[in-house]
Length: 240
Image 1 (tube, helix red, strand yellow):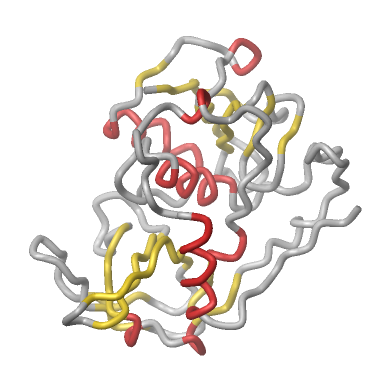
Image 2 (cartoon, rainbow, N blue to C red):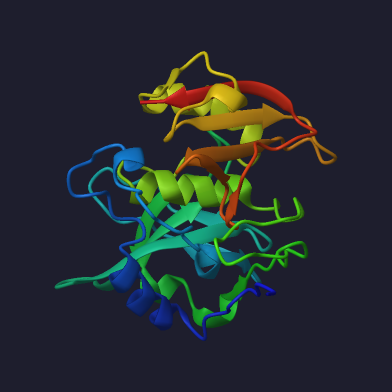
């Protein structure tokens, strides 16, 4: 069957979705997800990703929050969590695909009033549609556009990291994951264990690739594949 991107009507609808999925909330025991995935199907984070239609002035919340900044039109972000605050009203946890140590932080809480619905365009990669069988395996390697963003959300949701990782290209994860407590396992993609995150460079646009070994298969946001990616330069596999 064909898999199609589902758009949300508003950021308020996202609040309902997040309350059901727990997206952005660390696992209760913080354990390795490979021990929790018996029979699990892929998580679908496609509804949380947006491209800004206009510039947004954001004032991050919190005692140690970064200073106010402007997020330019065309920037890409993920809605990670929403919750009600007695004093501030509804606040939104945003993951921003920003360069490490740049002027824009990658992980902030802001008031929902600063993120109007009309400013958000759900991103829909042109290669999202792929042939999928009943087990969630994809027969074609077409869907790759947002692999790093989906892996960032997966690591956050499963409690392996506590921030939305910085970086805009997948290959950058090779330098970022060790700062979050990951180590190089020394495994190749073929010998990687469940739970390992494998990082590649190269590719037509130079962004590389990132994927997670789960239930003996490979996942990067669009479903499971039986084999690691091909056509990229392997850097390393990482685990905690």
